[in-house]
Length: 345
Image 1 (cartoon, rainbow, N blue to C red):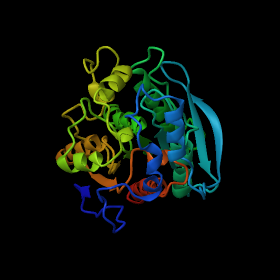
Image 2: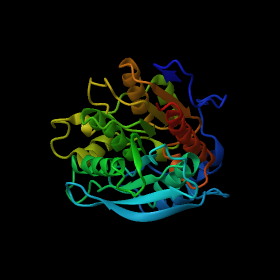
Image 3: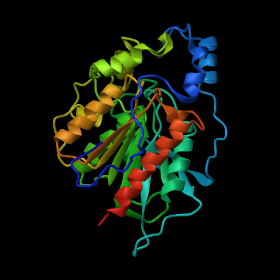
Image 4: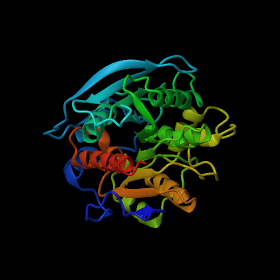
């Protein structure tokens, strides 16, 4: 569904977005997770090994051929490592020789992950191939070793402004810089929508895969609660999970900070001027409550926002190599980027 636009939605697969149960490869593997407690401190090597089998690659992966190189963007906390992923065939430049650029952030609960994980590398490769644009895949500092906000935000902002200035080596149209991410990376990407607007360096578009952008998390709707209730205990929320997660990312002051929307983009009443946005949640994911609430906040503020649900799927399909739902999600994100480019004045 798309709000605040005279144009129809970019994505229209013609299939229901909510089916009320797990589908696809994960449904076939569900027995691997039966009998496990909710994910958390009680998990050890055996539980994590079963999760690895549950999320094993799905052949054929069919990852497009791209070029990758390491680079570094200067930032207030030191250089920020990035992987610049370039398609073998670049999009046609404008009359000044410039192209757009995509800045992408992996997930990992703010505590783990890297650009090399499938959600980082495979997504960057698919987006680069489908759009013809370079992708700056950001290795932001994690909320470990005493690091908290604003360190993570500062890193992604540094990578964004570096890419916007063409630091990645390709002449760049500053009006065609896209920012996106998955899960925790989506949370970080969403904050750039606010910061870019405030700094007169607005993103051309923000695209978010299964984001968490509120604390506390909005309550689940009756429909979402019913869908989650059919899952094994391994996929049930830990009641204290968000408190633990956010205390790591936000630090001891939690949301008692000057600009909370630079930490979690949903924590504000000011969405005026927020960039055009695309959100895709997962049906069987407790974080869907946050993604849906964020879409409503943007819609209420008059922002051009499109929101979809990946049917019958759990959190983070982009991190399972070759998973059909993840491949389709990449195609949806790329379609949004291409549509913004096609309507760019």
